[in-house]
Length: 390
Image (tube, rainbow, N blue to C red; front, side, top):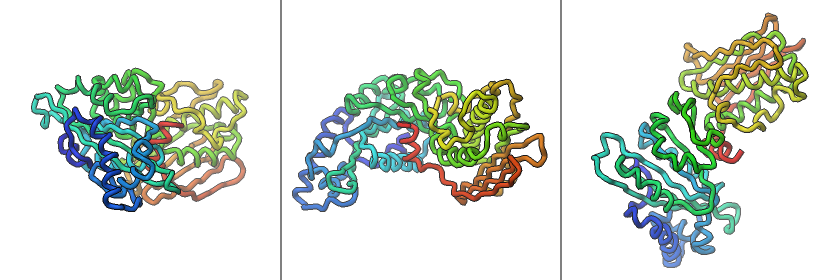
């Protein structure tokens, strides 16, 4: 993955000088700002000598500029392309505008790139952004590590040196080719406050992988679908739970090819909410299926990844759950359909992700309802914060 390493921004340095160069980066930026008289606007990077960054560092001292709230490790799996790596890098920079961070990006070498020797390459990058005032400054420091298979045994030490002490650690495994390949990174899996994966792009064995701390696992696909879960939940909250589940025979989720992973997440979430409705309809709970915060429940790892559940509430018949691809290819979207024993009864939600538009159509009681709604999943940086902190 040397090409990925080369595509990412930063200044290459000897790996043994990471700590020293990070400290020097800010003092050098401060000195450059003093020499140039730069205006503290924008957000250029200190590692490349950006004047805006230099001014940000000098405005209240290097110690303030490098204050961080979280440690973050982004592990770029072997299928990651250079363009994809740059896109994720930009996501991290946008994330850091809210949460000042010290970040490490891991770039393992592919079999074709690995020459069999002990090799670690390193880059550093720094950037600051102002908030509403000059005293509200958010900074990010990034260390990029490219390494051969033989060097993995020394990676834990390099990562530890690169991170800040006494801060929570978050680990994002992006586009890894097999969960078993993460076995060499147990020091991250076991220490991380949260382990983030995206079930829409993760391999199938991610669902059954024996994670060291299953309770720490979070799914970015589940997180970015928060607006979908909220709007569907709020619509269904207008009906009594017993109306929603009475006569329900089939819960069908149809999806375009590009949204198979997201559809899996939605299907499992619907299963949980229907079971909740069944329990409520039998007096097992006072909450309705679509209470406006169906996401106030935590994101259990097994649930977020689409694990099957055999429970069907208080002895009520469990509907069939069907997940199928839309062969028409007419839109980039997902359709949810509840089918009932009563022909006149139905619920349908159609979401066109390409047009950012959704439509509800339902008849669960004596009245027919139809509603158009906006559709916009969380952007990547907000999905990160949702999965990490909520």
